Length: 613
Image 1 (spheres, rainbow, N blue to C red):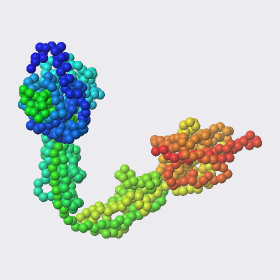
Image 2 (image 1 turned 135 degrees about the horizontal axis):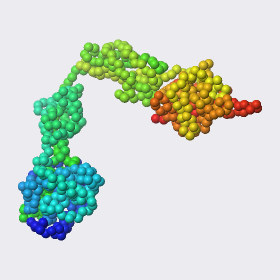
Image 3 (image 1 turned 135 degrees about the vertical axis):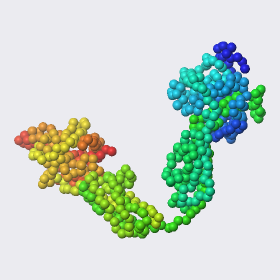
Image 4 (image 1 turned 180 degrees about the vertical axis):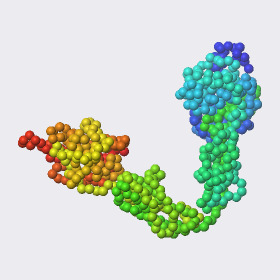
C-alpha cells in the first residue's frame, strides 16, 4: 500500500482524482426503499448501477439479480467503497462475507479502523433518513449526492488515509456532514458487526386448532425493543385473555392469539413479523475482476461494505390452520320500538317503548336504548358516540318495556336506537338509526304571525327583558343590544329605546337547530332620528349578520330581502318553528311624508338569513 501520509497533500489530491474511475450512474434506483431481504456471509448478491457524484456515491445491492436490469426496483442494501485505489465494478455479481474475508491491504485490516467505518455507516445516510441525517449533521436540507459524498470521503479517510485530506467538496453541506461523521467516529469507541444484528421470527402454534376459540399461541422472538406483526388475511390479534394487542409494538417472548370466537368456519392465516434493520449491515462485499470469476487478495475489484437503508426490515412469517366447529342455534329476538312523542316542546322527558318477541330470558343478555341528537333534519341524523345524548338500560324480556325518561331542552330532531346483547341463547338484536317511529321533533310551539310595529309610533315594550345579546352587521353600522319581547294581543312590542332590538320570545333561540329566530327594531324615533335598523333596507344578499350571545358567536348569511305592506299580516313562514334554523330581521321602510310635515312608514322590510356553519 502506498504511504499516503508521506506523499503530502498534493499527492492526496492526485489520489482523489483516481476515484473518478467509479462508474457514472445511468439508471438510478430509489434510495427510499423498504427492503425486506437479508443476506448471510457466503451469499452471492448483485451490484446495480452506482448513484451519486462521479467520484463518490453508493452502489445498490440486490439479493438476487433483477430480471430487468433497466428497471431493477428497490435495492435491498447499499454499498460504499473500501479501497480508493482499486477500480470499482458494477452490474455484476459479488460475494458477501464477514470482516475476515476482506481482500484489501489498506488500513481497513485494523479492527479499530473497522469500528470507525461501522460508526460512520450507522450514523449517516442511508442508514438514517436523509432529512434526519441532514439535521444531525448540521446541514438541514442536504441533498442525496452531498450526503453520499460525505459518507464515502469519511470512509476513505480511515481506510486509505491517516489524516484529513483537502477533499474536493461539491458543496458546504457535504463538508459539514463529513466533519460531523469524522468527529463523531474519532470520539467513539467504534462499533462491531454485532451492533447491526437484527433478529425477528415467529413460532407457529403447536397442536390442533379449532374455530370458535383463541387460535395460538404464536411466540415472538426478536432482539429489538419492539417489532410489528401483520396478518393475512386480516384477523383480530389478541392475548391469552382475548384482549386486543398493539400489533405495531410486540416484544420478545410475547404470545399472540387469533380471535376466532363466534366463528364456526375452518380457515387459515399467516402472521408476519417485521423488525427495523438488517443483520446484513457491516458485511464486506468482494467483487471479481471478471464476470463469473473468483475474487482473491491478489486480483479483485473494489471491495465494498454493506449498509441497510433506514427503511429496511428483517421479516419472518408463520402460518396456522384451524378446523370448523358447530354451535347451537341461537334465538333471534325482534325489537319493535316507538318514541314517546313525535313532536314535543323543549323541556320534554322522552322515553322509548320497546316490544320484544322471540327472546329466551334468563341467560345474561342486557338491554339499552340510546337517544341521539339534536339534528337539524331527519336526513342529518347519524347515530354515533359523539351524537349520543344519553343511554338508559332495561332488562330484556318478551313483551312491552318502557325505558327510563331523558329530559331534552334543546330544539332539533332526536332518535332512539334500542339494543339487546347476545348471550348463550340469544343473538344480539337492534334496529337501524333514524326510524320514523323512533324520531321526535323538539321545537317551540307554533304561533300566529304578529303585527310588528317598528315605526316611531310604537309605544314600546317596557317589560322587555334585557339579555347579553348583540347584533352586528358590518358595513351598515348596525351594532345593537337585544332584549326579549312579547307579543300581547298578537302585536310584537319593540323596546322603546330605538337603539335597541327586540327578540320575540315565542321564536327560536339564537343558534337553535330548528325554526326562525325573529328580531325586530325601529327604523327611527318619533323625531325621525335613526334607530338600530335605520339602514336595514340597504342590506345585500350574501352579507354576514353576527349575533353574540352567552359567550358564543353565531354567524348568518343574508339570503333574501323582502318588503310587505304594513296593512297586511306578515307571512307565517317568517315565524316558523319548524324546518332548518334561520334568522328573521324586521323593520320599517317606505317612508311617507304627511301634508302637516309628519311622516310614517307604509312597509315592513324583512331580511331572511341562514346560519353559516
